[in-house]
Length: 317
Image (cartoon, rainbow, N blue to C red):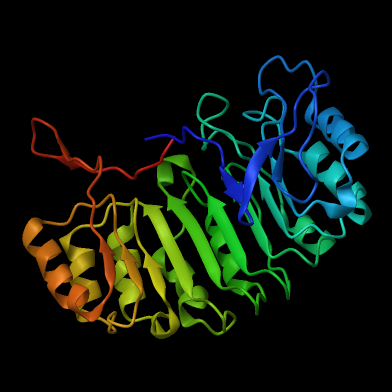
């Protein structure tokens, strides 16, 4: 599966693409999440020029959410100029509360082709941000950062570098309520191990965490086993281990671990769990009021002639 749709909303605001130079009227500055985009291939206008037009046309002091779409040659070029433009304009966006970098669909640039960079300067520059997201793991860096206002952090990749996992775990994010990491596969740069998640799973630096998603991983059984004994689970409302290669091994560990009956939702969609074990999960949690998502979706085994079984994450390339 690939990503086929752009973000439809950010910060509970509907996404609206800032139009080209010849477009007509615009919505109110604070009514939408503005998507600024160029073209990956043969761009007539680069991203920074589109952003400059946006800053001239819209009352940026009222803008609450920004979505960075495609920049030219994103498959080969880090968004250095994009970050520089945003950093230079920081004082023009006093109301900005949400920022997402890399909203590209597969037709523009596959998720594992998107070149990223160290995105933490954006968190330093916008201390009032409540939500921050990034798509693409190639060259992505996230050294430890301190941000007292951030409530939601989303990192979507086909392969999340271990350094990013460790950087998130070492960050001071006392207000963070929602953490969503797409761990991915080794083939696309996902070289972390379950042990790299320990600082996150301890919950020591994340006192307000209520929604934890560790998903889209080929090591989902090991992640589930680590989560099963994690102190942070006791305070969660939503646990999301979806989109990965979760089998009976990981599901059994979850059932044998810390109680999950306090959860509002357990999301395991796109999985490789047998029907009998799926029923055990339902019987253990559904009567307690837990919403359980066990939709297998397109998770299908592939078996070679020699008996080798292949299983895949939901979003890879």
